[in-house]
Image (cartoon, rainbow, N blue to C red):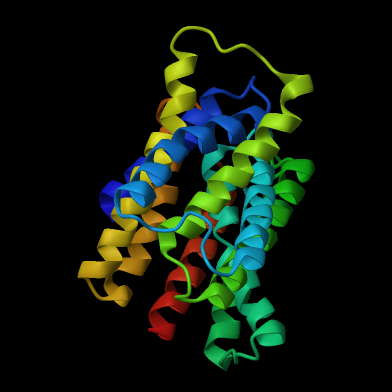
Length: 268
């Protein structure tokens, strides 16, 4: 899980470094470079590419690319560590959607943990005067759509292989990112080509090692370690991009991650 979170943090760092390249183009490169791994895996293991529940698989791809695009757009207005921590609000929205769409229940302590995380958002917005309102709106919408991704995957269940689900997501993201970036295309220069292709590599290995971690260890031991991504990304932001985090912003991030970790531990 530590390797996984480092990989995702490196991906976040690349996104922040390529701030001059539009979000659609980043979505395209993030997705197209992952297709090499997903198609290779499916073909090697003779797994049908189209899957079984195709309508839900397409829906997962559409919702996923919407969330990813909004996240990449938000990084141009927010410190990268703040954007990543706010994106992790997704489990809260997923739980709320599950109440109405999957008829699941939320226990009273979970509402307290959710309130704690939302309090972190209020601290970030209300007391950190440097936080950009438009960037906050983008990342909030990204988290909402990311929460919907959890619901769609839950509806798909075990009817389709996980790599089939990821492959649909990458194919749809490649198409959407490619089409939308046509009128905004900026030719990468030199090492930027490798950085853009590296988005897919880091993203893929982040997913692989996260999956391995959940397979070999208890979920309640592994799940809280996911939030190391926020710490690694904040450190990248400070030492590589000279981002400044106020005391209020760090307190807000701590409340968000603390509430989500407590919820994960309580559920398991």
